[in-house]
Length: 371
Image (tube, rainbow, N blue to C red; front, side, top):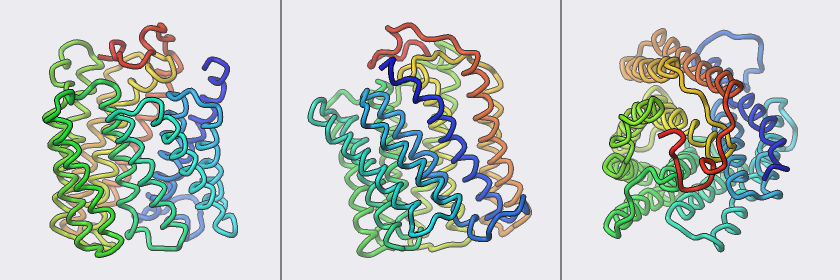
């Protein structure tokens, strides 16, 4: 793996750049007047954040975990696709390259699944497959609202699989595993139903989200480890609001059903993609840096600043969505972006000053470096 590590830093940084462009597009979309950009750029907010940025970073992380040389094609292709979106490449080249990257990721999981099948690998493989299907629907020209839940399934299942893989969930019993498979199956059935009867599918997905969130809450080990270290307390502080936001998003899906746009759509999706996903990313970043890239990140109390800003700004944004307050909605979105930028700055700064983790801490199955 040492010979491949020189790929990590540039790919990580370019994935972060894609996220920054996605945030820029999001601020324009919500109503802020920022440096000149084509009108269509605002429509790239979701694709750049999810397919371009997070898709690249997740593909890179999985490739590093599986120690696969050809797996680096996945983040390279998704980054190429993100560039295609940003520079308005012709012939749908952006979505085509991102779809190709998701094909590589699914193939990587398929290859690894034959060697080490487990609940974690299965869960993440299903997430990668959901991303592939969502990207395929995107390429056919379907409106984003019709397939965005496939992208949601990608992130939710990958994140849940990571929690299982890192040994952070108490899911060793047959009853616990069966409960998870039941709730995840409901979620997946809802995704399939979205293609047939969209409104019913959304409501089933929402029910599945609530089930998965409740399972995560009850199986989580971080609550018992919260007193062991500063990082353990921070991780626990990230996880609780993340799971609660997943419940909020699930309940919204059950209540709202088919919402193709507008303020309710904004509140429902951002509870999921900002509240749940980024709370979990805040929690997972030290784990991933330690176990995947061999870096022990220094803890800083400043990490709580971006965590608190994220939660408060999302409450403001969703409250403004529900009340119809456009100015507060814009400020909620701006503070969302500030919280994410602070997270990126803190991660880069304390990663730059990080200490290489000992080999025994980098191996799979231990999280002692950050617990």
